[in-house]
Length: 469
Image (tube, rainbow, N blue to C red):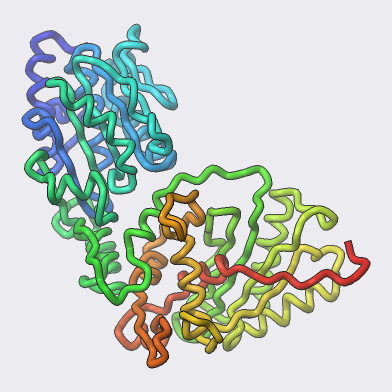
């Protein structure tokens, strides 16, 4: 292991530690972040995707472990995927770059500790899903690592603030700037004087491919919130005419999902391609979790129907659904244009074999259809309102509510939901812009978003016939 002289040197030179010991090559921004950990108590980094945040966090953990006696390093992130599959895996990867280091630092699924000192000299992974995630840690040398910090709720930060009152405690926060409020947002705004802050634009990072940057620009524009957050590393704009703000969408994506053995809600939705480059998108929902099943360009209605049947059979098998016990699965299809062919085919499949396809309950849905509603002008606006209500963190009484929907992390979906504008009609009703209007201002067809609207749309089930069980 390192000599005492080397430890004293590297404790104040993390960049050299990473280069000499871990055999890594930090870029200029990563070097600044590492040096900030020596010079400042609290460091906060906002950036776009792919700039190497997880790597610099992993280097920081290993550096602190090797250069500070008996440290404790609590690490957290909003989801198990972000914490364990990305950050914790990154730590394992880098420690293996040095054989001596690899034998001295013991890595487990939730803990990294110095050999022979498992209870006193360690880093630990705790998801930010419970208020006590970062409580109960006491040591002369502390380093808190908070990944995707914009998605971590303020109550998680409270014990960190208490610990930072001691001289040996430090904090490193990194994340995409998805939320317009909270601890991470404040660190770059009203509380900025208390932090060493970094803003890393993906366009200026050698680690971000220009192909990715150009793709986002081409698809959503440099003035879009998706570009601001996921490339430029800026906080989203609070635009008055956007119906569902980006922070609501990003917060949903960053929410932890705990699957149940037997979901209470199973729905399927399909937006059917009409022409050109439009996509057919099939998605499904199990309780609060929404996922995409297939996306493809094309109008083959028979193939689309077959894909929906395959998904339904998969869900029936996976969750052990039984005709005498479980409700059928609502399958909501965009019935405009060629979508009617998918509806007809699915109904034919069920008619030909009702016993096998008992689980199939088809609901045709028309987008943009005028409806009789006190507040909403058409069916698309109503469906957007349903999704918006599901995304809201508070109920009608202003009280916090349980998570109702967790969206997939999909750039196209995020842009389509958070980029759709609305207006008030002459009758003082809300109307979101149509696909035609969106395309006219250079926005892609909201195929992924429309699929999600269908998946989340509540249904009125048909009444059972008398004598039916």
